Length: 601
Image (tube, rainbow, N blue to C red; front, side):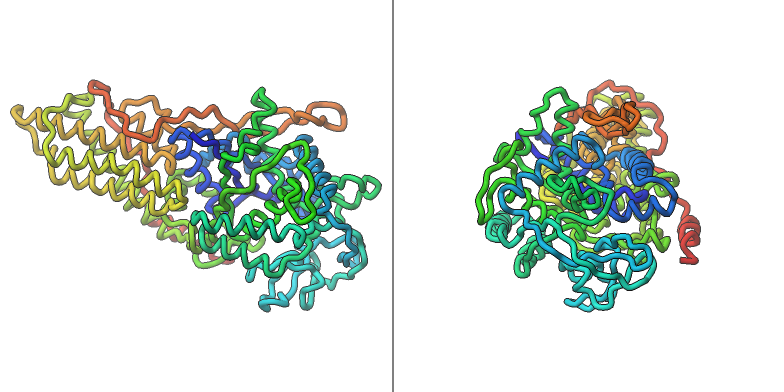
């Protein structure tokens, strides 16, 4: 058994999340975590809403409310969506908790005191018309490196290089289009050059492991070629105060500094709420523990460079040495598992332009497992993928309904009609044993693929076995065995089918937990094969509201007891009721209906 930290990207709380977001961080991390739990590993899956930074400040101003009020609203929306999707977090929290503030500030102080935070004078941008600070990502212009006209002041998404606003050609404010005015201002910079040697050695070691996706490791190593100090504070009044600069309330820690520390702070909050405040150390201080970070490719740099650099600086692992602080020697990531982008009908998701399918809208009209299946089978695992309504309908109907759902329905219907319960088998024939052997081998094949983050190949392998089970029905033709003399053979075939459905349902459960529970009920089980998350209202552990009342917020958590990743023998005599279809067949008319929603974009 290993201890595994499943560190899931923090969705930004400036609005509800769309299906492209959960295709990158949500479903892949949940499939992996569910499988690892079934293998007996001690998994800690953590994340939360990222609630600081300029976009929330701007969005709150637009709605006439405070940033905290906007964060509260969107935090709850996101929590509800992720629970409905079935993501099995041990703790999904938020970055505006007292616990998070304390952990982030302690982390900053140690990195600074170890010599890896440098105060530098730089040019900050302000709006000439309002006098307000314009944070980097709200300045747009042409990238000086690749020439892309839509580069931001902190990064060019086209070529992936980090930038400063003053690097941009023809910079303008994304808020009102005016040319920003640049003034001198002091900020703390993370001394990445002083950590470059340690970062390079760590990445070389990760490359030798052969486990990282090639695009992630190569991008990360290429980043080292032009490494330079990176600003870790901002001129903004919404965020975590900078230790030592309490007399400068307009300066806060950069949202990306505090967000990545969230993996640690969420683990600590989980431990504090569990009754064992030091339990988190088993995942962070034990060098044998493993950690996997899940996100989209636009966040690679922060997880393969910035966060490891912060950990190295905290540990004293750079050129200047130093000593770890109160959290002890922290583990570096075992693997950064980055997905590519999901597009929508050939266009990049853009909430501001209405090119978006929000998770809650999707789940209000379609089954959660239909979306999870599409993401698992056709998502952006190692290359960009396109979501189209035609393909969503096709995969739902031809693969989920006609393939897997039909197998379950046929098996349960025949058992119910002919025996009413799982029958006692007679002597197995070669064709029966061949199917059972294929299924037994499937556990190793599918498990190995999930464990190495090849989920598309894994679910394809399960669906291939579904096809073999459907072929078995066609070859054995149990529906033709009506003579009393054929009853033993019929019982053997239907028992074999019951075992096949059970095996396949276990293999499918990390991908499709909702339907796994429904199928378990169909086959006479308790309907609790795949544990599901829940929302719990909690009080902040460290701070209260201004009036002294408890500050409450929702978290995602769960009491997860998973079955083993192996065959569970079906029990002869288990009652099987007449089944209802598990999956909903979609009318092809919805393709045009859905496209019409976006026709004027």
